Image 1 (spheres, rainbow over the protein chains, first blue to last red):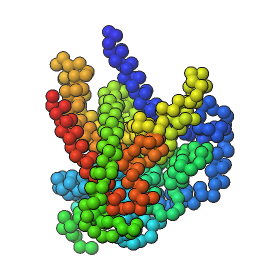
Image 2 (cartoon, one colour):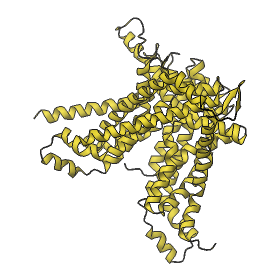
Image 3 (tube, one colour):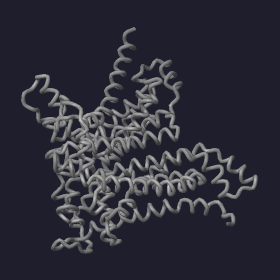
Image 4 (tube, one colour):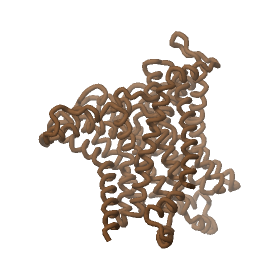
Amino acid sequence: MSAPLASKLLWLAFIAFVVLFLTLPLVLVIVFSFNMSALTSLPLTGLTLDWYARLFGNESFWPALRASLVIGVTVALLSVVIGTLAALGLARMPRRWAAIAMTSLSAPMMLPSLIIGIALLSYFVRFLKIPLGLPTVVLSHLVIVVPFVVAILHARLASFDWSLVESAQDLGASPSRAFFTVTLPIVQPTIVGAGLIALALSLDDFVITFFTIGSGNTLPTMVWGMVRTTLDPSINAVATLLILLSIGSTALALSVSKYRG
Amino acid sequence: MGRLPRLPRQLTALAPAAAAWLLLFAAPLAYFFVISFWSVRARIMRPDLTGRNYLATLADYGDVLLHTLLIGLAIAFVTTALAYAFAFAIRFRAGTWGNALLLLTLITLFGGYLVKIYAWKSILGRDGIINGVLRSIGIIDEPLTFFIYNANAVVITLAYFLLPFAVLPIYGNMRAIPDSLIEAARDLGANTFRASRDVVLPLCERGIAVAFLLTFLISVGDYVTPRLVGGGTSMMGHFIETQFSFGFNWPMGSAMAFTLMASSLVIFLLCRIALRQLISL
């Protein structure tokens, strides 16, 4: 029986290939951020923290990090409030209506960021006539982040046992008291997880930020400037920080929400 | 607070999301669509009702549009096929490792868009990692230049970025397929390929369509990848973006964007019909 073995080996090779394909490029960026040579190329020439020292000495780094974190945390908090309310509303709606509402709310996930970015740019500048800056970036990020938060919480509430809330209300709890003492504690891990995913999405966004920030930088727009203009090797250092921030918050999200596949 | 009847309560809960959707998504898109009929004179945008921008898009950028749609199709095909095979491996072939592979897919989903493109630029580039390896083991003396700054580099980079997005909806469909269904097919004499083709594939039609649409739309609208690794590869996104940076012709950029989206949707619907035909064969 060599055929099943051959097929097993082929599948194994395929899985190994995809796993390497998914991880190797990110691993290489991280490895090169500690490499002595100024060129991002093999062979490795020795270990150094110089690129991080140079990055932290770069005067545009700290404002960009600060802007990224301020935007990310604000977007996470706002989108969690908006998204949780929406998911709760959807959960109590007739299935057909909820499906239609869900599809419409998810539409922004399907559009290229470029189109959302330029549409918002013209809307802010020409129609609303408001100056671009961090607030416009926050509003813009909500467009793409809220659908993710709603989708995550909607999936969680699909398996929620509503009889618990009804029992609380039968025992005399007001709807808001039942929400804060029964519903919220049960879905809280998912809410925290969704908030961290929102943070990761916001930290990672480049295209929409680029069009709606006006002047100033976030980490991704700073990386864009470095990729385009210089061959500054500290780009590997800032790229590594971005990878760690976004993957870190995703991993944290999966672990707090006890994600099990 | 008095007890509100059921329906209004649900609508109140949905109100903030609905308001955000209306004011920050639907209204900007509608306004942006209106702009596509405006005209520009002496670099000043004026309200108008002209179809000239659309005619100019087709006349001046028709070949770029075609090229963009073809590259988008290539990326969507490669990514969706790879995603189907990987989702199949996670669900039916990886055993207890399946969850770890799924976790890896979820985590690489958010690994940084710009960082991922930059990573491929440093892998494929003239002084990049592949050339470095080949030179240090003595296979080549001069760096090879055909890895980067062409359409292949764009396809590889975007397929890499989009793969996790494509795996999840297909896997979502596969998770609902019970093992017993596959076993039944095998008991009836189907080999793995037949079982996958006749049982699994039809049940994943929706997930495949979502994966294909997502990868296709994001690819045709991308301008960062062609600019960083595509060299002279001309894609619509690049020319649309230019209207907003150097060209300052927003109406033209808007007409180009809506032409791109409309033609992409037509192509997607044709592909979906083809997929249904293929599955029911």
